[in-house]
Amino acid sequence: MKLLQGKIVLVTGAARGIGRAIAIGCADAGADIVFTDISKEENFVSLEKELNSKGIKAKGYVSNAADMNSSAQTVEDILKDFERIDVLVNNAGITRDALLMRMTEEQWDLVINVNLKSVFNLTKAVQKTMLKQRSGSIINVSSVVGVSGNAGQANYSASKAGIIGFTKSIARELGPRNIRCNAIAPGFIETEMTKAIPEDARKEWAEKIPLRRAGQPKDVADLVVFLGSDMSSYISGQVINVCGAMLT
Image 1 (cartoon, rainbow, N blue to C red):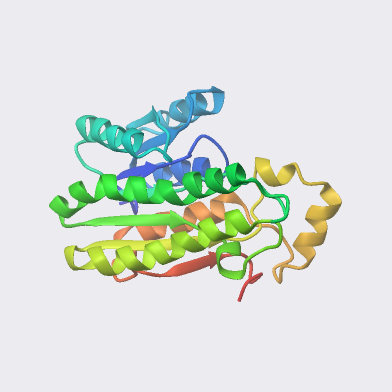
Image 2: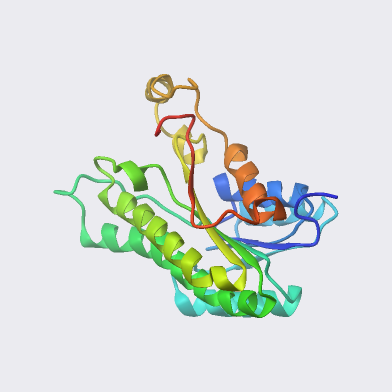
């Protein structure tokens, strides 16, 4: 039996990058997949098609994770179609990097809303059904810079640090109803976003990592599968770095 057989997994911001790898990894582990993204473009459509080709049930929903009403309505729609949600993966995120002296209020607010408020929105929306089920696994995608900080990313680092505090609080709050909550803190992961960085800079960063390489989205997805499965039934309130020992 596959690790996530019989489970319904919701992944936000899944059309590309780490979110896409998480959705595919969970499908390969036997889960039915529901995913969201801000618009129904080519990557959205191709992901839905790829997931359904794996013999599981999958459906994408256009939704703004940063908007509470949109998130609540999306969860309602998912429950009508799938009846339950066993695993929530809060993955939606953006960057708007700038030194503090140049960072605008708009850049600050946008990153906080998409990265942090979205976690509040979706967790609040799914908790009712998880409380009724008396089970659930909530997995929040943070970042190593939420632990260490990073120059030029005050907004991003603050949002990812906020996710860690939220994760620990929810683990304590919902634990008595058998609902677990953990955070994953990826390091330097090769995605469409990092590929835009000059190759020399990427090589320089990789050389500073003890494993001497960047991570792949699948490295994060594999941990999501584990944390969503019953194999991690006594793991909650934790922050697990996926960084090749970059942050120890």
